[in-house]
Length: 438
Image (cartoon, rainbow, N blue to C red):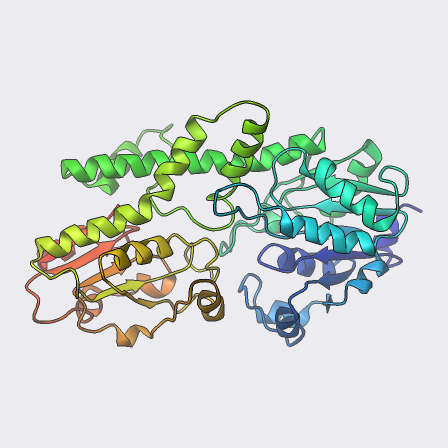
């Protein structure tokens, strides 16, 4: 009987190594079909899952309570499984080189507990070659087993979009790959259990790794182009959103928009690709130029705010600035690699300590990662400038009077930065605001 059949019959188990925004939804989905061991080193997170609490807000508390995932932080429990999925983050170092320590650490832990006949599938975004050239040697070293003989490996890049309730694991075509045809077939069949949209069988592990890393690089470049247009049009006194609405009436115009590119995918993955390119002697031109533009947008927003404060006749040094939103994207509690911190740090260079409110963000994570403490929106009072930074649903319902109540009534001009263009420029300008957006 094959491993796939044993999984379906309940004779073998599947494990998820890493239960964050990507791993946890995968574990929950598979638990509806097979027996699942969910492993994470974070004891606090495991404790919340066991209580039926979803700190990621990806599937919700009810789904966590109802699922049959066996949540644990005991690595020895991994020995109970023979099909392993590794879904840990792959960040970059301060110098933008890949930080492979999470995937190396996961490989070390899994290797110590790997049994013969297992298949290990990596989902972490990496540059081509990491699975076979970095992870496999660690698995072999720690387990004493031989890849291709005692265990097999595959790669299936995650495509989950945090905070997106439409494009989910089940509805996005899954790229799958394996070290040989037999492994590929098993990996494909296992994922087909939960992915309604079906799978795409890549011809090799490196092809699958490359496909993932270029998906986000392409998006990064397109957003960089929009950000550059925004800088140009702002200098011309032209509204970028209006330009894009007009251009978007053409059938083949790609509808991208300017914005802050953060998070653990789009703002990170291009550096993995360019790092590998430089190793083989090619220095990226387009990809890195796009990265430079996007990495600089936080500073650009802060500078634009300061210029508008001066235009409004406000003192910059003691200005009160409120920021609505801190996460890297809307309707998601994740603050990792948020570019809002770039705005905050640049404002601090001008002597401004902004007040930040975000009802969606993970407060503990923001405190731990950035030493940022949020205030309730009701405390946004007597501001000289307000930045609507993240398009959370909670902010979409804010009216002009709601936002106006946040300002110092003594100010003749209210400086309002609507980064994502959520509000009507015309409405706010008619009310006398100095309105600015990307």
